[in-house]
Image (cartoon, rainbow, N blue to C red; front, side, top):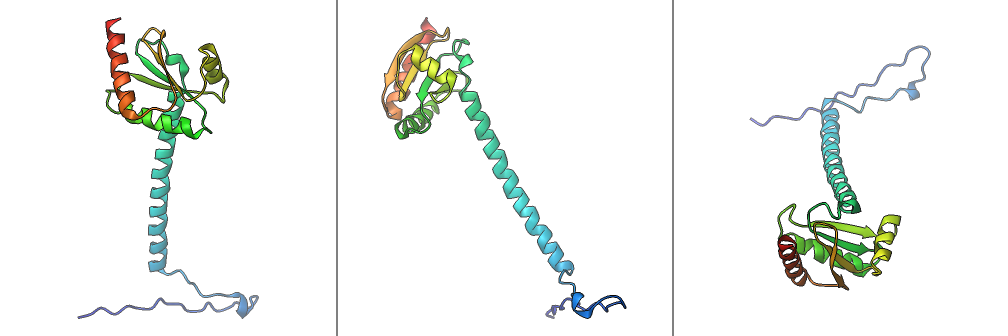
Length: 170
């Protein structure tokens, strides 16, 4: 037998002696609509919370990449001299990250020297390099190689593998 839907009980509230009949409204929130709003609010909160989590983790990764004090900590490092407003720099960063996926964590340190802040511009000036450049450092912090210009990920993967091999020998 098919269950019939009941309409919400929307009885008008009777005005008291001090109230005007026009100022009294019927209740539009019955149990079903309240539960629906709670469900929708919960779904929205979960979506916003998940998005916030991923945004925070991305910001933390970016902050870790900009810690130039990691140069010379015993792990070979690739430092990109980077201008965040330069499309060629952004393309190089994308290719570099793609190439780095082939390596294990801790095998090679990837750092970004943003030339728009003091530390990044000082590093670029120290080695006399423009943006769109990758600097390859050994584990002691000695500059081994400079790669200028935009490169594809296959070329970078080979260069990084060779850099790791040379750093392990020395």
